[in-house]
Length: 406
Ligand code: SF4
Image (cartoon, rainbow, N blue to C red):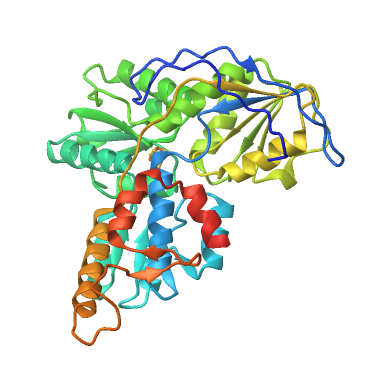
């Protein structure tokens, strides 16, 4: 961010974490002048959506992979992109992480992390064979949908799954009960649905966590018409992060001459944000990977947001390039306080390593006193499992990425 980035706190927003809450967009608030400098665009003002960027699930996954990188000699393997963001993936590649799309490509015994999107049961099983160290970074909210899928299929339901064909989350979730599930991508798929020999059976509806709310709602309405006894979870499967980011964008989309959505094209929730901005009245919507893709002809009021896997550093660079003459206004709908602890396998792994280190350090001829240090990171800080576990909540994934890069 350019020096003097003029942010102040807007009025306290409502606390909201769940998908069932109704979010009332707060009025955006002017928060100060912007200092112009050479080489930037100087639009009139920027409306900055909040929440934006990293969600709790992405925070968890990035920090977990960073710990793997520190604890193990490279290469550490990761099944699928850890999160759908090109910059995050490239940063980990630079640290020796090898991303694979087939678990068979992981050599026996090599450490492997499974991505935040959730993996098919057979992939998890295969990964755990051959003595590999496996850490599953699946988001707990995806695990919840896997569980719903398993239970409904076991009870004899046909499960309609609203999602995007080929997306890792959809592939992993549908693999939980492949014989029971039918994929719906659009309203017309409900009309065309032929349950054939399966009908009449009870019908349930589940969803990918990162869809556009309106895209999902249209399909749900039609499915309810067709299947009056349709079973759905009490709360939609769209996660809090998806819902909150879309609500913040809705609050500003109609006031912006253009909206810049930062995130990768394979990021479902990023694509959903672009759809929301267009649906809520913004005449020009741009999905960019980073500042280098921001067109030079932007002017007037520009909305800015970022998908759940896009680092805040990319947002800062975009805002710095836009250099709004009349400052930046925050459009905040809620404060997210969700936190997901590290994957249990990682916690167990670090505890085991710590116990081993402590055992050898306690030997009479050990060069150091009994201690808990597992490793020393790039900045000389001792890495201990106690530190990992106790620091995790207050440690931001963005800071971890910066430390890795440094
Ligand atoms: S977008 Fe939602 S489901 Fe996906 S990782 Fe974030 S919190 Fe989890």
